[in-house]
Amino acid sequence: MAATKAKTKSRAQICAVVGSDESEVKRAARELAAQMTPPDGGDFGCDIIDGAAEHSDQAATRIHQAVEALLTFPFFGGEKLVWLKNASFLGDDQIGKSQAVAGALEKLVETLSSGLPESTRFLLSAIGVDKRRTFYKTLGKLGQVEIFDKVDASKSGWEEEAAALVRQRAGDRGLSLSAEALEIFTLFTGGERRVIENELEKLDLYLGPERRDVSADDVRLLVPMSRAGIVFDLGNALAERNLNRALGLLDQLLFQGETAIGILIVAIIPTIRNLLLVKDLMTRHRLQRPAQPFFFGKTLERIPADATAHLPRKKDGTVNTYSLGIAAIHAHRYELPELRAALEACLAANVQLVTTQLDPEVVLSQLIVRIVAKR
Image (cartoon, rainbow, N blue to C red; front, side):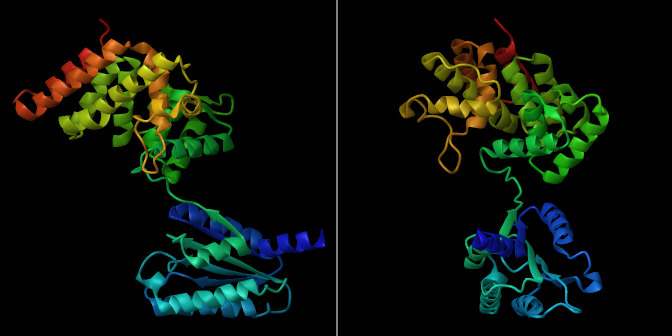
């Protein structure tokens, strides 16, 4: 038991806050530094070394300064925190790969591994860390590492990660987003932590203490739409067979300078394709409509692998269940022949856009009417 306590105490002495989300890393590091700084340390309770370096020699000097601070006992006894702040030399770049930095980091690891005095704590904060490096892996073994990475909206399936972040942040405020509100809010904010916090604060103030449930209408009223958000909402309107909203969003995208062919390829075709794929699966295997997009992944796991081999994949090879889950929620609004006809209509519209002089807005408007209008 004593050994376990000693190990826990040792790990608590060494902490790191890293990631690609600069604002969140800085915020979390400030909070952790305040917790780790001894309350009675005075001006000597926190020794801050600026880790922002312009070249490898400067970076190595900063690391050696941190080592020296770790080996120096606090003035007047007591405790102290050594904070290597905003380190810029741990990435996959020329500075990070230099021999000077590598040697200095080895010395830092040796100092941390040998065991710090009970009176000393160490905090590292860094942006853009290469997680493949030996130093980073060793740091994780020696202490506690908090990671704050940006959601990469360029990667397929990013919505699931971003939605989980939105749910967590909303829950911290006591807010509960409906399934549709969560989808829309996620796409409108694009996974940006700062934007998510700002927009949740607006919703929190708007609803007041008496109301905690956030509807899709609340999100549409208060949260500004990004380009990705408008594209997503157009897809949603098509899936919901909401003709007026679909045509209104089309006008908005065209007004913002989006090309008709781009709207067709990015918003309309993927929506119809996902609806067709999911409708076919749900019909063949008698799958139930999910309550939320995230639940559909578990449903797909219960059917044979060869039945899902044709589904769109993320870069890691796994099925992009989030977008398919959204389609599964709305697939009941269409019949299979309607979706097959809609996909053929998309192909015809594509040909019209690239081979004729027809007004692109007319082509897409007519396409949306063909898809959405019930016959």
